[in-house]
Structure formats: structure tokens, C-alpha cells
Image (tube, rainbow, N blue to C red; front, top):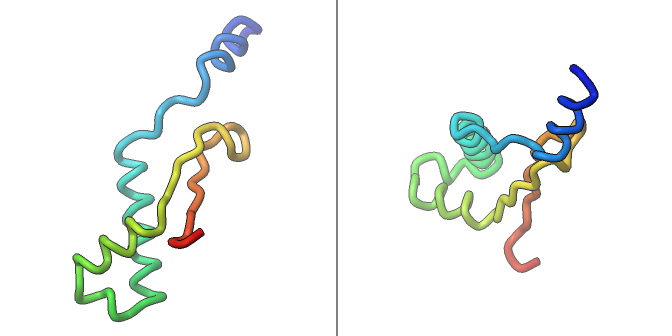
Length: 77
């Protein structure tokens, strides 16, 4: 990578998160919710509501090496 390529990539910022990666992250979070709260396994509406209440906010370029980081905000905070 040349100096100009490096400079151009830094100025443009982190590329947007691919929709497939976003869906995989959502699935992983829902699987963790099912393990933590077994009552959500048989209730898809409650599972979706619990996922939405987590308040996942993507912060692009905040992680190690400029990766996207998802911050969880709990209800009531």
C-alpha cells in the first residue's frame, strides 16, 4: 500500500458494515439471550422485544484496527 492509498483510506473512514455481518451479529446476540433467559426460547415476539430493548448502537471505527464496535445500552440507563 502506498502512502496515498493509506491516506485516502484513512480519510474515507471505515467501510459500512455488510448486511450479512449485521445479521450474524443479531443472530449471535439472540442466541445469547436465549441461553441467559430460557423463557425467551419459545416466544419469538418477546425475544425480538428483548433484543430491541438492548439498544445496540454501532460505533464504526472505534474498535481495534478501526473495526466497528457495538455498544449495548440497557433499558433505563
